[in-house]
Length: 351
Image (cartoon, rainbow, N blue to C red; front, side, top):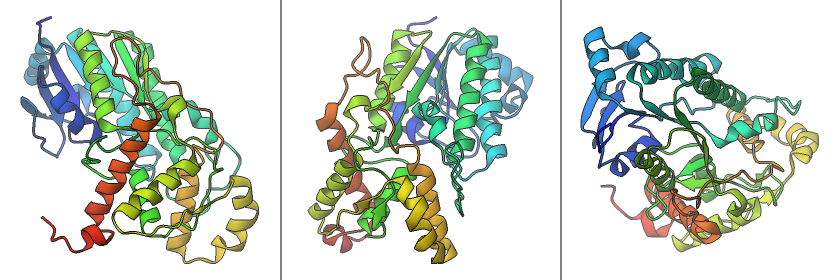
Protein backbone atom coordinates (compact mmCIF):
# COMPACT_ATOMS: atom_id res chain seq x y z
CA UNK A 1 0.00 0.00 0.00
CA UNK A 2 1.39 3.42 -0.94
CA UNK A 3 1.82 6.17 1.64
CA UNK A 4 -1.20 7.99 0.22
CA UNK A 5 -4.20 5.65 -0.04
CA UNK A 6 -6.24 5.46 -3.20
CA UNK A 7 -9.80 5.81 -1.99
CA UNK A 8 -13.01 4.88 -3.76
CA UNK A 9 -15.71 7.11 -2.29
CA UNK A 10 -19.42 6.45 -2.77
CA UNK A 11 -22.02 9.05 -1.93
CA UNK A 12 -19.57 11.87 -2.64
CA UNK A 13 -22.40 14.31 -3.45
CA UNK A 14 -24.21 13.62 -0.18
CA UNK A 15 -23.99 15.40 3.15
CA UNK A 16 -21.18 13.28 4.57
CA UNK A 17 -19.42 12.84 1.23
CA UNK A 18 -19.13 16.57 0.50
CA UNK A 19 -17.82 17.22 4.00
CA UNK A 20 -15.40 14.31 3.72
CA UNK A 21 -13.69 15.26 0.46
CA UNK A 22 -11.54 18.05 2.03
CA UNK A 23 -10.58 15.62 4.82
CA UNK A 24 -9.20 13.23 2.20
CA UNK A 25 -7.11 15.84 0.39
CA UNK A 26 -3.96 13.84 1.16
CA UNK A 27 -5.43 10.77 -0.59
CA UNK A 28 -6.12 10.03 -4.23
CA UNK A 29 -9.92 10.00 -4.30
CA UNK A 30 -12.00 8.34 -6.99
CA UNK A 31 -15.64 9.37 -6.56
CA UNK A 32 -18.19 6.87 -7.82
CA UNK A 33 -21.08 8.98 -9.05
CA UNK A 34 -24.46 8.12 -10.50
CA UNK A 35 -25.91 11.34 -11.88
CA UNK A 36 -24.60 14.20 -9.73
CA UNK A 37 -21.05 15.44 -10.43
CA UNK A 38 -18.94 16.51 -7.46
CA UNK A 39 -16.04 18.87 -6.91
CA UNK A 40 -12.94 18.00 -4.96
CA UNK A 41 -12.32 14.42 -6.07
CA UNK A 42 -9.26 13.52 -8.12
CA UNK A 43 -11.32 11.36 -10.48
CA UNK A 44 -15.00 10.88 -11.24
CA UNK A 45 -16.27 7.46 -12.25
CA UNK A 46 -19.87 7.01 -13.39
CA UNK A 47 -21.40 3.78 -12.16
CA UNK A 48 -24.37 2.11 -10.53
CA UNK A 49 -24.14 0.69 -7.02
CA UNK A 50 -27.01 -1.70 -7.61
CA UNK A 51 -25.53 -3.32 -10.74
CA UNK A 52 -22.95 -6.11 -11.03
CA UNK A 53 -19.38 -4.73 -11.14
CA UNK A 54 -20.97 -1.37 -10.14
CA UNK A 55 -22.22 -0.99 -13.70
CA UNK A 56 -18.65 -0.79 -15.04
CA UNK A 57 -17.28 -2.75 -17.97
CA UNK A 58 -14.73 -5.42 -17.16
CA UNK A 59 -11.69 -3.37 -18.18
CA UNK A 60 -12.64 -0.35 -16.07
CA UNK A 61 -13.63 -2.54 -13.12
CA UNK A 62 -10.38 -4.51 -13.20
CA UNK A 63 -8.36 -1.29 -13.36
CA UNK A 64 -10.29 0.02 -10.35
CA UNK A 65 -9.66 -3.18 -8.41
CA UNK A 66 -5.95 -2.95 -9.20
CA UNK A 67 -5.62 0.63 -7.93
CA UNK A 68 -7.98 0.94 -4.96
CA UNK A 69 -6.84 0.01 -1.45
CA UNK A 70 -9.50 1.84 0.56
CA UNK A 71 -13.27 2.12 0.07
CA UNK A 72 -15.42 4.62 1.97
CA UNK A 73 -19.06 3.72 1.46
CA UNK A 74 -21.28 6.70 2.25
CA UNK A 75 -23.96 6.24 -0.40
CA UNK A 76 -27.38 5.41 1.02
CA UNK A 77 -31.07 6.13 0.72
CA UNK A 78 -31.79 8.19 3.83
CA UNK A 79 -35.27 9.44 2.98
CA UNK A 80 -37.74 7.70 5.29
CA UNK A 81 -40.41 8.04 2.58
CA UNK A 82 -38.60 6.17 -0.20
CA UNK A 83 -40.26 2.83 0.48
CA UNK A 84 -38.82 -0.55 1.42
CA UNK A 85 -37.90 -1.66 -2.11
CA UNK A 86 -35.84 1.41 -3.05
CA UNK A 87 -34.27 1.61 0.40
CA UNK A 88 -33.10 -2.00 0.43
CA UNK A 89 -31.97 -1.81 -3.22
CA UNK A 90 -29.23 0.66 -2.31
CA UNK A 91 -28.63 0.21 1.41
CA UNK A 92 -28.48 -3.59 1.35
CA UNK A 93 -28.03 -4.80 -2.24
CA UNK A 94 -25.71 -1.89 -3.06
CA UNK A 95 -23.56 -2.77 -0.08
CA UNK A 96 -23.25 -6.32 -1.45
CA UNK A 97 -21.74 -4.92 -4.64
CA UNK A 98 -19.32 -2.75 -2.66
CA UNK A 99 -18.25 -5.70 -0.51
CA UNK A 100 -17.48 -7.71 -3.66
CA UNK A 101 -15.27 -4.92 -4.96
CA UNK A 102 -13.50 -4.63 -1.58
CA UNK A 103 -12.80 -8.38 -1.65
CA UNK A 104 -11.58 -8.29 -5.27
CA UNK A 105 -9.30 -5.33 -4.50
CA UNK A 106 -8.04 -6.75 -1.20
CA UNK A 107 -8.97 -3.36 0.23
CA UNK A 108 -10.32 -2.04 3.54
CA UNK A 109 -13.94 -0.93 3.83
CA UNK A 110 -15.20 2.02 5.88
CA UNK A 111 -18.94 1.48 5.92
CA UNK A 112 -21.12 4.39 7.05
CA UNK A 113 -24.23 3.09 8.79
CA UNK A 114 -26.33 4.87 11.42
CA UNK A 115 -26.46 4.91 15.20
CA UNK A 116 -30.21 4.36 14.99
CA UNK A 117 -29.74 0.68 14.16
CA UNK A 118 -29.68 0.44 17.97
CA UNK A 119 -33.24 1.79 18.19
CA UNK A 120 -35.28 -0.35 15.83
CA UNK A 121 -37.55 -1.24 18.76
CA UNK A 122 -38.60 2.43 19.03
CA UNK A 123 -40.36 2.72 15.68
CA UNK A 124 -44.10 3.19 16.03
CA UNK A 125 -44.78 -0.11 14.31
CA UNK A 126 -42.50 -1.93 16.77
CA UNK A 127 -44.26 -0.21 19.65
CA UNK A 128 -47.64 -1.36 18.34
CA UNK A 129 -48.84 2.11 17.35
CA UNK A 130 -50.56 3.06 14.11
CA UNK A 131 -48.62 5.14 11.59
CA UNK A 132 -51.73 7.06 10.56
CA UNK A 133 -51.19 9.04 7.35
CA UNK A 134 -47.41 9.13 7.69
CA UNK A 135 -45.33 8.75 4.55
CA UNK A 136 -42.20 8.45 6.71
CA UNK A 137 -41.35 4.84 7.51
CA UNK A 138 -38.20 4.77 9.64
CA UNK A 139 -38.52 1.00 10.00
CA UNK A 140 -37.75 0.53 6.27
CA UNK A 141 -34.58 2.60 6.57
CA UNK A 142 -33.43 0.97 9.82
CA UNK A 143 -34.11 -2.55 8.52
CA UNK A 144 -32.05 -1.80 5.42
CA UNK A 145 -29.15 -0.36 7.42
CA UNK A 146 -29.09 -3.33 9.77
CA UNK A 147 -29.13 -5.63 6.74
CA UNK A 148 -26.27 -3.63 5.21
CA UNK A 149 -24.22 -4.04 8.37
CA UNK A 150 -24.87 -7.77 8.32
CA UNK A 151 -23.66 -7.94 4.72
CA UNK A 152 -20.41 -6.29 5.83
CA UNK A 153 -19.95 -8.47 8.92
CA UNK A 154 -20.62 -11.74 7.09
CA UNK A 155 -18.37 -10.89 4.15
CA UNK A 156 -15.09 -11.44 5.94
CA UNK A 157 -13.48 -8.33 4.41
CA UNK A 158 -11.55 -5.99 6.73
CA UNK A 159 -14.11 -3.35 7.62
CA UNK A 160 -14.92 -0.57 10.08
CA UNK A 161 -18.61 0.16 10.66
CA UNK A 162 -19.20 3.85 11.38
CA UNK A 163 -22.43 4.87 13.10
CA UNK A 164 -23.22 8.59 13.13
CA UNK A 165 -26.39 9.90 14.74
CA UNK A 166 -28.42 12.71 13.12
CA UNK A 167 -26.01 14.74 10.99
CA UNK A 168 -26.41 18.52 11.08
CA UNK A 169 -24.43 21.30 9.39
CA UNK A 170 -20.87 22.41 9.89
CA UNK A 171 -20.14 23.12 13.55
CA UNK A 172 -18.89 26.64 12.77
CA UNK A 173 -20.97 27.82 9.81
CA UNK A 174 -24.00 25.52 9.88
CA UNK A 175 -23.59 24.97 6.15
CA UNK A 176 -24.67 21.65 4.68
CA UNK A 177 -25.04 20.35 1.13
CA UNK A 178 -28.71 19.41 1.57
CA UNK A 179 -31.29 20.00 4.27
CA UNK A 180 -32.41 16.77 5.90
CA UNK A 181 -35.04 15.54 8.36
CA UNK A 182 -33.97 17.57 11.38
CA UNK A 183 -33.83 20.71 9.26
CA UNK A 184 -37.51 20.22 8.44
CA UNK A 185 -38.32 20.11 12.15
CA UNK A 186 -36.21 23.20 12.80
CA UNK A 187 -37.91 25.06 9.95
CA UNK A 188 -41.29 24.23 11.46
CA UNK A 189 -40.13 25.60 14.81
CA UNK A 190 -38.76 28.80 13.29
CA UNK A 191 -42.01 29.38 11.43
CA UNK A 192 -44.13 28.74 14.51
CA UNK A 193 -45.82 25.76 12.88
CA UNK A 194 -45.21 23.31 15.74
CA UNK A 195 -47.31 24.22 18.77
CA UNK A 196 -46.29 20.92 20.33
CA UNK A 197 -43.53 18.38 19.98
CA UNK A 198 -44.45 14.73 20.66
CA UNK A 199 -41.48 13.99 22.91
CA UNK A 200 -40.98 13.90 26.67
CA UNK A 201 -38.91 16.97 27.64
CA UNK A 202 -36.08 14.87 29.09
CA UNK A 203 -35.57 12.67 26.01
CA UNK A 204 -32.04 13.11 24.60
CA UNK A 205 -31.82 14.41 21.04
CA UNK A 206 -28.58 13.13 19.58
CA UNK A 207 -26.99 14.94 16.65
CA UNK A 208 -23.46 15.56 15.42
CA UNK A 209 -22.03 18.09 12.99
CA UNK A 210 -20.94 16.96 9.55
CA UNK A 211 -17.33 18.09 10.06
CA UNK A 212 -17.00 15.86 13.14
CA UNK A 213 -18.24 12.88 11.12
CA UNK A 214 -15.84 13.72 8.29
CA UNK A 215 -12.89 14.19 10.64
CA UNK A 216 -13.62 10.81 12.23
CA UNK A 217 -13.68 8.98 8.91
CA UNK A 218 -10.53 10.79 7.80
CA UNK A 219 -8.73 9.78 11.00
CA UNK A 220 -9.75 6.14 10.52
CA UNK A 221 -8.50 6.10 6.93
CA UNK A 222 -5.18 7.71 7.83
CA UNK A 223 -4.70 5.29 10.75
CA UNK A 224 -5.42 2.35 8.42
CA UNK A 225 -7.93 1.01 10.94
CA UNK A 226 -9.18 -2.37 9.73
CA UNK A 227 -11.97 -3.45 12.08
CA UNK A 228 -14.39 -2.44 14.79
CA UNK A 229 -17.42 -0.23 15.26
CA UNK A 230 -17.16 3.53 15.72
CA UNK A 231 -20.03 5.56 17.16
CA UNK A 232 -20.01 9.20 16.05
CA UNK A 233 -22.58 10.64 18.41
CA UNK A 234 -23.15 13.21 21.13
CA UNK A 235 -23.77 10.29 23.49
CA UNK A 236 -24.08 11.36 27.11
CA UNK A 237 -23.72 15.00 25.99
CA UNK A 238 -26.85 14.95 23.81
CA UNK A 239 -29.14 17.78 24.91
CA UNK A 240 -32.64 17.04 26.11
CA UNK A 241 -35.69 17.86 24.01
CA UNK A 242 -36.49 20.75 26.34
CA UNK A 243 -32.97 22.14 25.99
CA UNK A 244 -33.04 21.84 22.18
CA UNK A 245 -36.29 23.81 22.02
CA UNK A 246 -34.81 26.49 24.27
CA UNK A 247 -31.67 26.71 22.13
CA UNK A 248 -33.71 27.06 18.93
CA UNK A 249 -35.78 29.83 20.49
CA UNK A 250 -32.63 31.67 21.60
CA UNK A 251 -31.01 31.37 18.17
CA UNK A 252 -34.23 32.55 16.53
CA UNK A 253 -34.26 35.69 18.67
CA UNK A 254 -30.79 36.56 17.34
CA UNK A 255 -32.24 37.01 13.84
CA UNK A 256 -35.37 38.83 14.98
CA UNK A 257 -37.75 35.89 15.24
CA UNK A 258 -39.85 35.52 18.33
CA UNK A 259 -40.43 31.79 18.63
CA UNK A 260 -42.48 30.48 21.51
CA UNK A 261 -41.11 27.29 23.00
CA UNK A 262 -43.59 24.55 22.02
CA UNK A 263 -45.18 22.28 24.56
CA UNK A 264 -43.64 18.82 24.86
CA UNK A 265 -46.07 15.94 25.04
CA UNK A 266 -45.34 12.26 25.58
CA UNK A 267 -46.36 9.75 22.89
CA UNK A 268 -49.02 8.21 25.15
CA UNK A 269 -50.96 11.47 25.39
CA UNK A 270 -50.59 12.03 21.66
CA UNK A 271 -52.13 8.64 20.84
CA UNK A 272 -54.80 8.77 23.51
CA UNK A 273 -55.98 12.35 23.17
CA UNK A 274 -54.28 14.71 20.75
CA UNK A 275 -54.30 12.66 17.59
CA UNK A 276 -57.89 11.34 17.76
CA UNK A 277 -59.38 14.62 19.01
CA UNK A 278 -57.37 17.33 17.28
CA UNK A 279 -55.23 15.87 14.50
CA UNK A 280 -57.92 13.64 12.96
CA UNK A 281 -59.87 16.72 11.81
CA UNK A 282 -56.98 18.49 10.12
CA UNK A 283 -56.50 18.84 6.37
CA UNK A 284 -54.92 15.60 5.02
CA UNK A 285 -51.64 17.34 4.23
CA UNK A 286 -51.35 18.79 7.74
CA UNK A 287 -52.34 15.44 9.22
CA UNK A 288 -49.66 13.66 7.20
CA UNK A 289 -47.08 16.21 8.29
CA UNK A 290 -47.93 15.61 11.95
CA UNK A 291 -47.87 11.82 11.53
CA UNK A 292 -44.47 12.06 9.81
CA UNK A 293 -43.15 14.02 12.78
CA UNK A 294 -44.64 11.43 15.11
CA UNK A 295 -42.91 8.63 13.21
CA UNK A 296 -39.52 10.35 13.36
CA UNK A 297 -39.66 11.53 16.97
CA UNK A 298 -40.57 8.02 18.14
CA UNK A 299 -36.88 7.15 17.67
CA UNK A 300 -35.98 9.57 20.48
CA UNK A 301 -38.83 9.17 22.96
CA UNK A 302 -37.44 7.93 26.26
CA UNK A 303 -34.34 6.49 24.56
CA UNK A 304 -31.09 5.78 26.35
CA UNK A 305 -28.06 7.79 25.16
CA UNK A 306 -26.01 6.27 22.37
CA UNK A 307 -22.45 5.15 23.00
CA UNK A 308 -19.82 7.54 21.62
CA UNK A 309 -16.34 6.74 20.35
CA UNK A 310 -15.30 10.39 20.05
CA UNK A 311 -12.31 11.20 22.20
CA UNK A 312 -10.88 7.70 21.99
CA UNK A 313 -7.20 7.38 20.93
CA UNK A 314 -6.74 8.31 17.28
CA UNK A 315 -10.21 9.84 16.94
CA UNK A 316 -11.32 13.50 17.10
CA UNK A 317 -12.12 14.91 20.55
CA UNK A 318 -15.70 14.93 21.72
CA UNK A 319 -17.20 18.43 21.31
CA UNK A 320 -18.91 18.08 24.69
CA UNK A 321 -22.16 19.76 25.67
CA UNK A 322 -21.00 23.27 24.81
CA UNK A 323 -19.66 22.26 21.40
CA UNK A 324 -22.80 20.28 20.60
CA UNK A 325 -25.06 23.19 21.53
CA UNK A 326 -22.89 25.65 19.60
CA UNK A 327 -23.16 23.46 16.50
CA UNK A 328 -26.96 23.46 16.77
CA UNK A 329 -26.96 27.26 17.01
CA UNK A 330 -24.84 27.48 13.84
CA UNK A 331 -27.24 25.16 12.01
CA UNK A 332 -30.30 27.17 13.10
CA UNK A 333 -28.72 30.47 12.03
CA UNK A 334 -27.69 29.06 8.66
CA UNK A 335 -31.16 27.63 8.13
CA UNK A 336 -32.78 30.96 8.99
CA UNK A 337 -30.53 32.70 6.49
CA UNK A 338 -31.19 30.14 3.76
CA UNK A 339 -34.95 30.40 4.33
CA UNK A 340 -34.74 34.19 4.75
CA UNK A 341 -36.47 34.02 8.10
CA UNK A 342 -36.20 36.82 10.64
CA UNK A 343 -35.55 40.53 10.31
CA UNK A 344 -31.80 40.04 9.84
CA UNK A 345 -32.25 38.06 6.64
CA UNK A 346 -35.68 39.08 5.32
CA UNK A 347 -34.33 42.07 3.38
CA UNK A 348 -31.27 40.31 1.97
CA UNK A 349 -31.19 39.78 -1.78
CA UNK A 350 -30.49 36.12 -2.57
CA UNK A 351 -27.03 35.53 -4.04
